[in-house]
Length: 393
Image 1: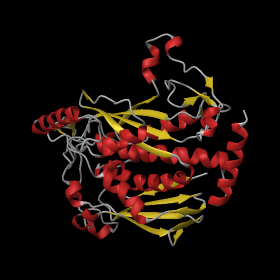
Image 2: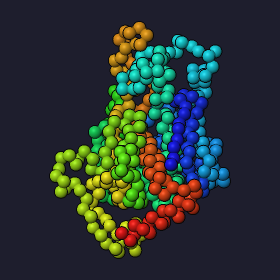
Image 3: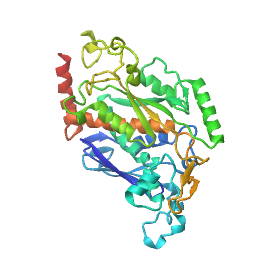
Image 4: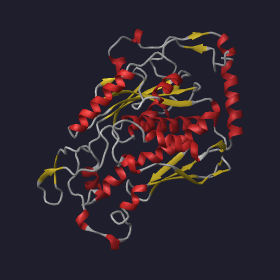
């Protein structure tokens, strides 16, 4: 299985990820990762930090001549803003300056809970690590996971479906075509009129010192039936994907398929009926079974069912406001306005890229659990054997 750790602070020298369990022989170039990092920095409503950072990855171990080695993969994303923070974030005690302490926690952030938990009197020690800046290196990990899935025809993409209460109609198109439309939009949505309305809403929020959230939708195509399991709670694919999405900063809700909509209509309108057509096998389908609807979002009983996996995640408005909310100074206990950090007005398009990354990581992990081997060739052999068996079902 894949496992990874990230390290680094928002204004530290770099963000680092170490990935263990990547098989050998997977094609992986820095440019593949850099394309995903560039997507994360796009989107209307981003703040000043995106004018400073131009994220690129350094692959420090685990790859030779464009192929993974099966040894731990080390990925580094440098923080260009570090040069402005080298003393403020210095690891050396000689640079300590208590006048820089942040003592007014921001509502909606990890600031106060983290300070109480870890016994810090300077909220800077919390916000540097809890910052969504950490997602830059998680996107790098997700790009490596996408590279692992690509030889097996599994693709991960998505769209923005809502920002600040403005919904973008979702055309009835295959996922790959939706992704192509979204790529041409600053908001990563599929409707030009909705995109303009979203931008107006962001401009209005910015003028008021406020922020906006929204909803992103991630789709995974080419997934065979049988990833995940029903036999234990922690092996259920939908549970693992929900946890991955909820781990993203500012995500407050997750849906699979029809999601909360299933609570409002009878079962006869929810469950996806089953059909069988052996002719599908000649067209490259994994099995002869199929469904004409996908309300389950590609997951039944904690397992992929062969249909596209469809997930939605709700992102709250970023809690760093230029019109700060009321707070309490932790040092004096007096009422004050919360501290203000440089931030975005809306980061929903960026959240989509991060959501794709964490979903790709979990799908890759489940794929390796089912078909795992130490090399690309061994996994291809295992996968081909499974596909041959289920074709006969």
